[in-house]
Length: 377
Image (cartoon, rainbow, N blue to C red; front, side, top):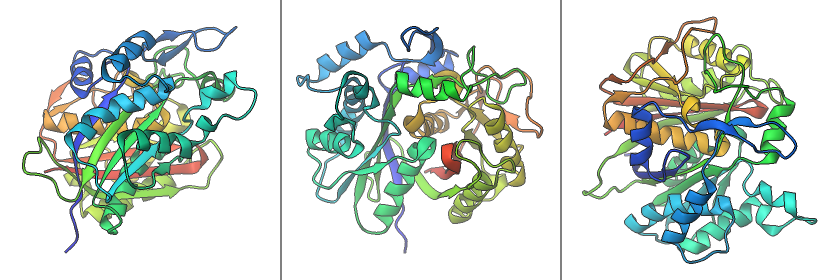
């Protein structure tokens, strides 16, 4: 008999709060972390979702005495701390880090390559601080990293390599990231509008998020979400552009749903990638229609958080589970008029609904796509 894999705890650090409860309250009120910020010297301000550094420093100092951490590392530690305090770490516990750029900001002020910029060193530093006994695992596959990290934890536990896992995901706003997306002319000049006719590009964001995944949940867990299925497919289309026919996302969703043994009619909610770029939004619409999911309520969280890169998939999974626990569908912020060629059931307002089965998807540069199916147990 196969093991059942559960997410039983989570936490996040974002511009809208340093725990899940404050984030959920802000989202219900329609608030967004996206605002104008000066990120690059000698350049105009950009619409991004950025954590207040003074508030972050105050929160960190209230929780930790050690000062020898970068800004991003402090975000990671704050996300992980409550979970580590509630769940024991054994020699069968995995530590999985999801990030795309890690401490890339260190490069701006260093003449030589600092050790902290290596993702393996970042992961080991975090693992050592909390006393993890196993070698850390790094998942860095562009913008699907957060979703893939859940899948990696699930499959590692199913294979018998670990009993449980702590997964943490994060990236921060940096000049490097802003400059890269700006070179693609992909950054919006206003708050992003996923799937909307008048969208004009992406907003970037920063956050960290953490989940605890186990095959042996205790009886006193507040909730359980079963990880039923997962898949990651590369469409091999272009270094930055997705397949115009949605092949990679279609195959990822199809495989994940087949493993979960779930039909399109059973999916209650889709947390989509929804970057508010022309090709991504159109590709998703095509892929979801190919899977006959066009009538399932769907949102993108990018209007609230911006695109948080390696954190986005994990953070959006957490908010999706929070939606299911509260039986509330959250609107796709800033959406007004359909701007894609095929219909989707895009959520426009807070709405009560019974949510049992969640489909979470992500897509990213290099043709990568990923999907997971979660069940509220």
